[in-house]
Structure formats: C-alpha cells, structure tokens
Amino acid sequence: MDLKREVGALIIRVVLGVIFFIHGLVKFQDGIENTVGWFSSIGLPGFLAYGVATIELVGGILLIIGLGTKVISLLLAILMIGATLKVKLAIGFLGNGQMAGYELDLALLAMALYLVIDGSKWLSVSKLFSNNKAA
Image 1 (spheres, rainbow, N blue to C red):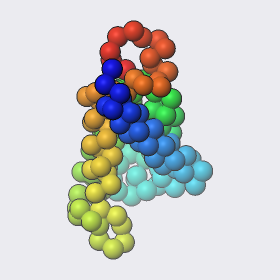
Image 2: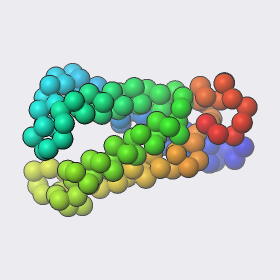
Image 3: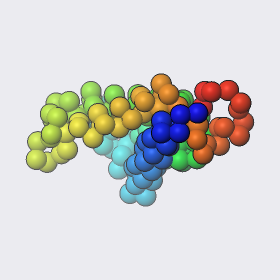
Image 4: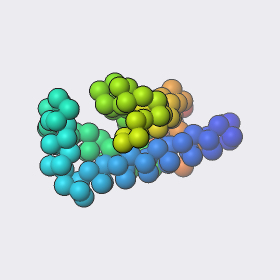
C-alpha cells in the first residue's frame, strides 16, 4: 500500500462525501418540493430532484464511510457533468454575479473521477468486505 496515495484518497473521499451529504441534506431540509420546482423550471423532469438529492445524501454518507466508493463516485461524477452542462456552462467558469460558475462543479467532478479510477481503501468499510485491491 502506498500510504501517501491512500491518505490523499481518504482526504478526497471524506471531503467529497461531506460536501455531497450536506448538499443532499439541504435539498430535503429546505423542502424537496422547492428543488422539484426548480428542476421543472429549467426543463428537467421534477421527479429527478428526488433522485439527485438521494444520491447526494446517501452517496455522501457512503463515501464518508468508504462503502462502494467507485460506484458512488461515478454517480456523483454523472451528476456533476449534468449540472455543468445543463445549468452552469452557460453562466461561465466564474459565474455571472448572481450564480456561481462551474469551477466548483469541475473540481468536484475531478475529485469524483479520481475516486472512480483509483478508489480509496484506507479506513473504508469496503476493505472489511474485500481482500482485493478495488474499493
């Protein structure tokens, strides 16, 4: 095990997990119907808001504990690609003064893709269930 790489991956996994957990939690706490309405207002089916919020909330928890890291990271990467293309790309890299640009989305996408490629086994629940190198 390359300890430096594993420590770095752990930091990325936990920080990404916390960020997405909070984003999902806020969607539910603020009233998921608000997010449903916003999705509809930008031309997306409103019911997708439930899926996105659930992936963020549950996926964030799973990343924090290190369970299904690669799969969850892939789902989060897909969400970031969708958010960037559907909402943020037209606003620009740094935003328009009213809404943030896609710089954070790009950073979150990069973090998620790193975890898709390399995983994060150190201090993970997945490691308890597996002896192989993929986590």
